[in-house]
View 1 (spheres, rainbow, N blue to C red):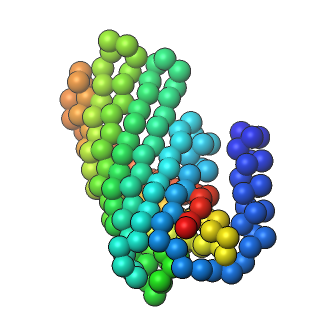
View 2 (cartoon, helix red, strand yellow):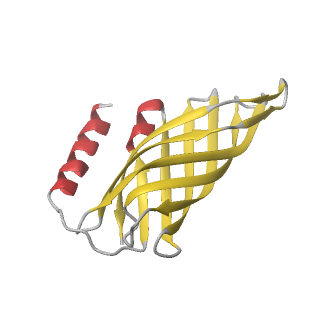
Length: 163
C-alpha cells in the first residue's frame, strides 16, 4: 500500500510539472485504484477521429492459490469538443472474464455491458491522468452454482502516458 502511494505521488508530481497540452493519438494507462483492491488494470486507447477513440483493457486479480481472475474489455470513448483525446468523456464497453477457484474447483464465467464517464488530462510531455467511474452489469455463470446477474461499480484514477 505504501509503495502504491509513493508511486502514485511520484507520477502525480511528474504530471504536475508539465502543463501544456499537445495532440496525441495513443495512450496506455494503469488504474492506480485497482491496486488497492488486489488487482491490476491497464488500458490502451487509440484515436479513431477527433471525438471517438477505441479502448482495449485487461484486469488481472490473484488471491493466492484460492482464486485468480482475468477480465478483458473493449469500448468506445466519446470526447466532447476534443482533438487531443482529453477532457470529459463517456464510454460504452463490453467485457468478459473468468474466475477460477483453486485447482480442480469451480470456475465462474462473466460477460456484460458497461458504461463509464470521467475526465482525462494529457500534459505537454505526454503524462496522463484519468479520473472516472464505471458501471457494469455482469452476467455470471458458475460451473457448480448456476446463473446470476450483478452490478459492478469501478472507480478509476489512472496514470499513464500518451504519444
